[in-house]
Length: 209
Image (cartoon, rainbow, N blue to C red):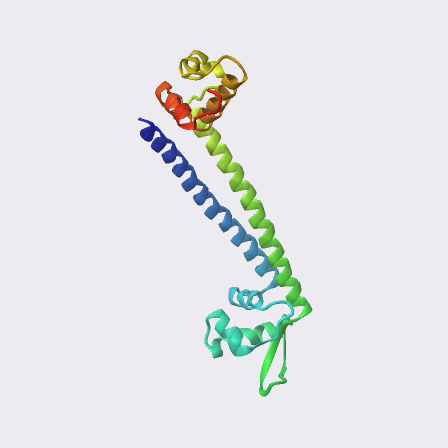
C-alpha cells in the first residue's frame, strides 16, 4: 500500500514535470521571436546572425574557420561574410600570418548587435526560468489541493494517542513527530493513511520514543 501511494505521488510529479518541459519549450519559442525581431531591426538574415554570434567580440578569425563553425562551405560562407562586411558588421583585414588570406573581427557596430542579442537572450532565459518555476509551483499547489490535503494536526490520520500507543510520551517530542507527519502529508497527501504513517514513524526511529 505504501509503495502504491508513493507511486501515485510520483505519477503526479512526473505529470507536472512534463507540463514544465512543455512550458519551457513554449517560452523558448518566445525568446526566438525576440531574437528574430532584433535581426529584423538590424537588417540581417538568419545566416548573418549566426556568423555574428559565432565570433567573440575580441576574436580574429579566418574566413574558412568561420565557415566551418557555421557548418557552411567556404564559398557559401564567403558570400555571407561579404554581406556582413558591406553592412559594416565585420572588419576584414589581411592575415599577418598568410597574406593570401584575410582575418575577420567584429566591428563596433557588429559587437553592439552581438551584445544586444546576448543581453536579450540572457534576459529572456532568466524570465523564462522565473515563469517556469512559478508555473511549476502553481501546478504543485493545484495537485496538492486536488488531493484535499490535511490543513492542521487534527486532520492527520495518525493521532496523538496512536503515538502514545507506539511508546511516545506526552510532551515536546510527541508534538514534534506530529508536526513532521503534517509536513509529510502536506507534501504528499496520499500518504495520510494511518498504516502508512505508523510505518513511517517506525522507520524514522525518532530518538526518545
